[in-house]
Image 1 (spheres, helix red, strand yellow):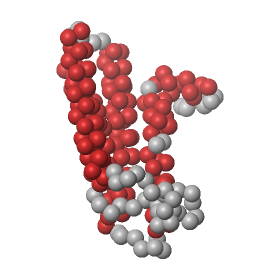
Image 2 (cartoon, one colour):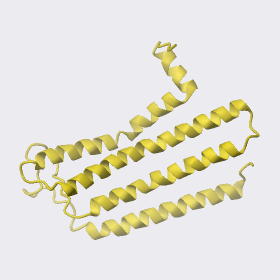
Image 3 (cartoon, rainbow, N blue to C red):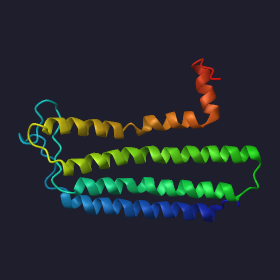
Image 4 (cartoon, rainbow, N blue to C red):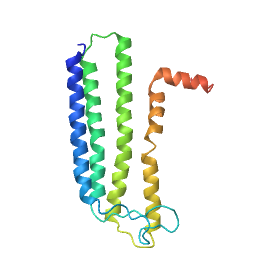
Length: 184
């Protein structure tokens, strides 16, 4: 079954509608919590040890925003499993093509799982922040922890090429040859 223009238009419109719905949820939800912008230079919010603003979690806004941020990765994960089902149903391909399609599908599923893990760790940190309320002595440590969580979350573009290299045999062989590593 070769996709035609109508099928591509259908796929594009689904992505456009889901993306529009997703952005409308974020816009209407965030607008409730914008109360005059970030207070960067108040003494209450200024961190004394690092030049960052202390993060405060007074309500569930960050928890719900993190849950909303996980939504695209769940959609990608479902689409990946549909691809696996499609590859397994259509047995008309030769063995080499099946192997390459399964390899590509495995890579795409892994590329959806890694950002999901990053988002889950962020969600876990926010949830633990609600459970364990901080006093003034632990506030600096919580702030440093949040900074490292955000740094880890933004390392997804670094992890994705590593996953592609390790799961695709031609890439892996090219990198190993370049590094002069010959695994047995």
